[in-house]
Every structure is written in structure tokens, then in C-alpha cells.
Length: 129
Image (tube, rainbow, N blue to C red; front, side, top):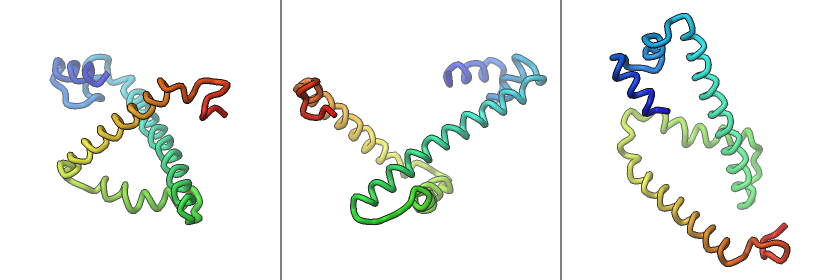
């Protein structure tokens, strides 16, 4: 989808999704596109916030720190996310991208080993609920 938007922007000589929409479809429906982009970002942010709040509160509880979902979310937002949003240049985060890729590969490998070893096979699977 992003590649297509890029190609349309290049062929119409525009610099944004909204401008490309205006050039190809017309200005009369551009408010629909702006609203749909807003809603997409809003619900994406809401989803990630819910995941972060649950994860952080559970991690804190596992080490004996009692924190509500709201406290956890406000804490991680103020301590981690806000400083990241205020960074002007994200080049300093490049090494952490490699760490994330290695973590994903490790998780995939661990899940594959457990799957092929039969750990999840019902009814006698070791981790079956």
C-alpha cells in the first residue's frame, strides 16, 4: 500500500497522501481520507496503549510492584515514549533495530523447536491447557 501511494505521489508530483488524493480523485472527498487516516492512527495507538498497559503492569507485578494499568501506561509514556517522540534524529536508534530483529528470530526459533518437539500436541502436550 505504501509503495503504491509513493508511486501515485511521484506520478502526480505531490508530496503527501492527501495531495495525491486531491490530484487523482478530487478535493470534494479529501476530508474522508483525512478522517480515515486519523481514525486508523487513533485506533492503532489505542491498541498499542492497551498492550503496553497490560504488559507493563504484569511485568511490574511479577517483581512485586503493584501498579494499575493507568499508572503503568502513564509511566511508560512519560519515561520511554515521550522522549522518543521528541527526538529530532532517530539515527541513534538504528542499533536497537538489529536487537529487535535478533529477538524476533530467537522467538521464532524457540517456537519452532517447541512445536516440532511435540510440546503443544493435545491431549498430552506439556503446555496444553
